[in-house]
Image (cartoon, rainbow, N blue to C red; front, side, top):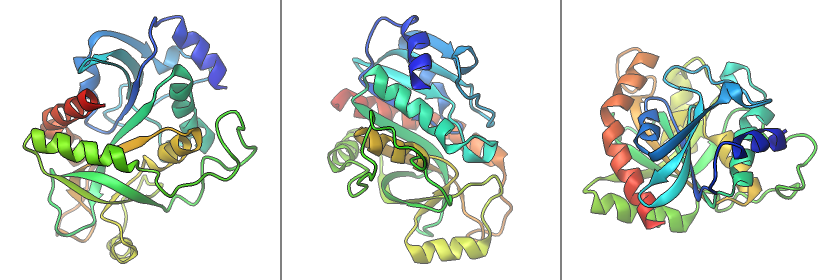
Length: 267
């Protein structure tokens, strides 16, 4: 239950974070750049899942960034790890109870749009859920939101506009597109990628969608950015690997940190 996790965390921190940031594969180093950081390992939180994905440290980082109080998830949970959707929803609900007003989500994704290149950043404008399930299935958590959750403007337009302005200040190009979420852990086939392109997807990944649905249910404004760490299956004549995802994530980490700092500064 989120209340148990919340009680444990509140014993360790003495402030209410304004912004929650979920850090994707290869992008976790931002959590180590916070001012006056406080780290809380997931393993120490009662009833909390444990992150097993490569490049995910598995802890919360609380501190200041660009003059704002923030909390970073340095590691997230994936359906392919065997966690139930309610486990993936739990951290977002804890962040809501901690008092965040905005959720910023990052991920590593494969480029479906053939105009994209490895290393591009994509502002998510919408998503397609191909995971075959939903974190809101089951008894509704009335204390967080309604039974039937509106998803019309899930990726908050005002935050997207602010992100583009921040990117321009940083001299960066921030592409825009639709993210399609799959379960993994196998990468998609070339035929699936061709189908996803027809459906209107620009990038594909194995996370984000359950977290964003949960955030929408909680009434949290959401901003989400994908780092294109590889081109999806069939776009280039080369195999896909998790090592490539981590490598590109590490190479582009500083750029993403610069962008996130500017975005947070403007919130």
